[in-house]
Length: 77
Image 1 (cartoon, rainbow, N blue to C red):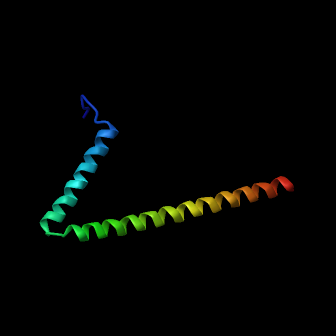
Image 2: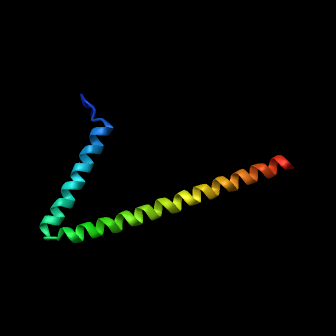
């Protein structure tokens, strides 16, 4: 089945982001979750996200150094 129009990737991303925000909002409203707890969970989430990004950046840097060292050894031989 062919559609006459296509939904762009940007529009799909925005609609998914809006749906996620509505889901989280309904979760907070439905269970009467205090905003202090929401902010505490958000801060915990951000700390874990930064930690994951830092570990991946460190591993990427270590891999880059390893490859450069390996390349240097192959040139020396």
